[in-house]
Amino acid sequence: MTDETTVALGTAAGALTDSEVVIPVGPRQPGMHGALRIAVTLDGEHIVTARPLIGYLHRGVEKLFEVRDYRQILVLANRHDWLSAFSSELAVAHAVEKLMGLEVPQRAVWLRMLLAELNRALHHLAHIGGDPLETELSDAITAAVEGRERLQQLMEEYTGGRVHFMATRIGGLKDDAPDGWFDRVMTAVADVRSRLPDVAALAGGDAVARVAGVGVIDAAMVSAYGLSGPVARASGVPFDVRRDDPYLAYSELDVPSITHDAGDSAARFECLLNEIPVSLDLAEQCIARLRDMPGPVAARVPPTVRAPVGHAYAWTENPSGINGYYLVSHGDQTPWRLKLRSASFNNVQALESVLPGCRVDDLVAVLASFFLVTGDLDK
Image (cartoon, rainbow, N blue to C red):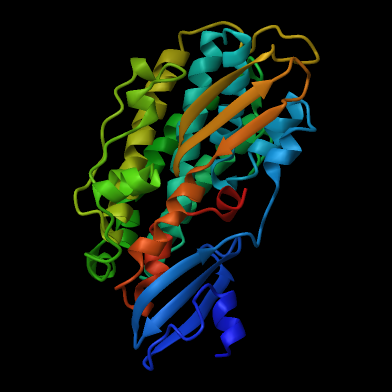
């Protein structure tokens, strides 16, 4: 490898020993729906250093926010983490409503929670169903894919969108649930729940045993890097915005703490898997409340939304971790500044500390255990 290539990958020329070599991994992402590059220094088959190199899918979304009105911003927001589309657009609306002092109708609040939990199950099934540990268990993969499809069809029926739902509006939701939709959700939830024992095979057995003790993150590292979501909870840090700083009506629901003490790649997959039935339970609880909760699904707002002069911060528990928006308004129909704190951006920074010491053949599994979405990382 030339000195120029070595420097470009982030390793000083001449700093390698005779047995070490720098290789570029990527640009790619475990789910193959984005681009992430990692400069890896190897000594034999073991990783000595690893440096994430981002910027291959730079979306510039924060600057786009500044020249879009609030309705258009919702469209952009659900695209940075396309596996968490509803949850992402929800956080923007939450920030604007907080600054406006806008009270969202209760039916819309509970419908938002229902859609958010279905979206969480979709996100988790996508990451597990991609067979990140290369089990090649066709029945288990089919169970995950078909279970996800059941929920996907219901989200599409409600919102009209298959991936980018765009159901949220400032002050509530675009539409109420279709007739009979709650019954169809309950049937689908029961179906997905029945498939979970098969899905669990994708994150268990010999496959997950291979990454036990690999890619360990301790609680101190969680704090140092600002990690969140299943990645943090797998290291024994139980923080969950839904429970610890409730928004919407999560204070009226029992959100259990799904944690693991090992902090390794196996623990992260286990946490993700165990959060799926929790979201299904919360979805059922939301439906039970909604059946006897009449009322509108949106507050009355002017056709052109103008947030008052001021600033507000709102965060939500996205499927992959904390999603926060800091909104600064000068009273216009566009924000003066809208800063996005995405889960993947913080979480990926820890790879530089996690990957050294791992074997190169465990690299993809460790990456997959961070549940990254490159648009969320490369915002």
